[in-house]
Image (cartoon, rainbow, N blue to C red; front, side):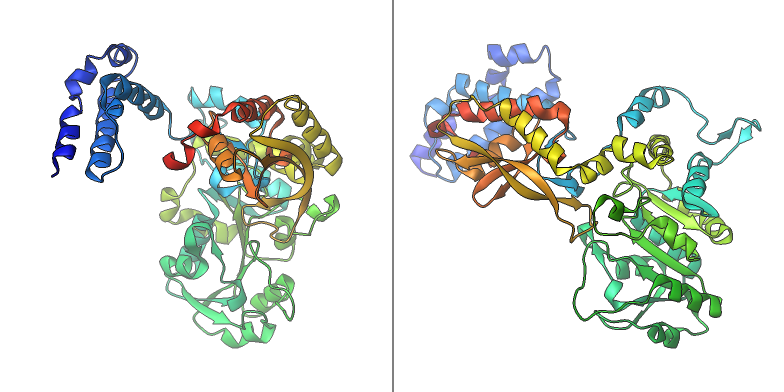
Length: 480
């Protein structure tokens, strides 16, 4: 080790010296000692690494006063909860990485009393004995969809896994090759089927599958005909797939149930709002499928859940599967799902009060008004770091739903000057709370479709902070 390195290492103050520093000593009265010690160790470790790798480290950076300031910043970061609120300005409504669907205010109002008290989660009040947690939502699901029976698990992948494991373990499931989708996190239908113990029988080709392909694959060991809605992609051009009604008739002919995995799933016909038509849950059940599965936190606009609906005998078998206990949902998810479903009794209420539906169906004129209101909060700001203008753009539904649907929207664009689009994106992402935008055509764009009205002041303040930033002192790129 060189003499210069050794000299720098000797200048690093000890943990005890730093603990005695006035700033850090004061922090010990308000912060857990473990957090303070961890912050000190992390800062000192970073300095040692910098010296070891011959990074430029000045004597000033090794002074206790300088290190104490860095420790205080680190304490603040360590004290923050890992799961935090962020402002979604990306324009992706059902953003998988940002928590998917927002819950309605009506749902949130119910959380505190139920979370802070006991409930009749599995207690039948009318009978005074143990009940089923599924009854709290099953009656609503039956009412809204016409299903004979229903149950709920913790997500749609679990719903598919549990249904396949119950109805087809050790037996064959016939599915079109063009429907072997992969969803987020590299979860694939073939992998889920393998885990369930079912044997997958692929039929047809990527772009074309005919009814005869299914019929030729049916044998004495066939347990299910599976249809998977390709909600997160579309094959266009020379294509053909078997209508669900024809598949159901084929299943009835051979006394084999049909399972329809809708993925995102929806209870409303989006085409009435000027969008691409998605198959609804009600339509699948009306055509006679045995089981239909879909998500609660995508187009439905509720909490994370996997919903299983269908024939009474099949749902009863799935419910009795011991695996269902491992995949069941808790009382708060049930509460959120029940309240969300209750809003669907009046479609107008659903579109107005369920945030996901409200954002998807929001008119362009309303978005223009919102963009103008947000722009008015920062229009008089004076900065050389960037300029601001409004522009038209397109939002996305997200969550693997309606992949071809472009939602015309209004954008607030930060045009680079002294700050690049990338540096502005980093700074807004490090804001408290973080503001998540997107870099597009060398501009940082903020889509008003997904910015909630209560967040306008937060976004405006974050932009004003960005305007005051001194680019020459900015270390965001190095810290990133």
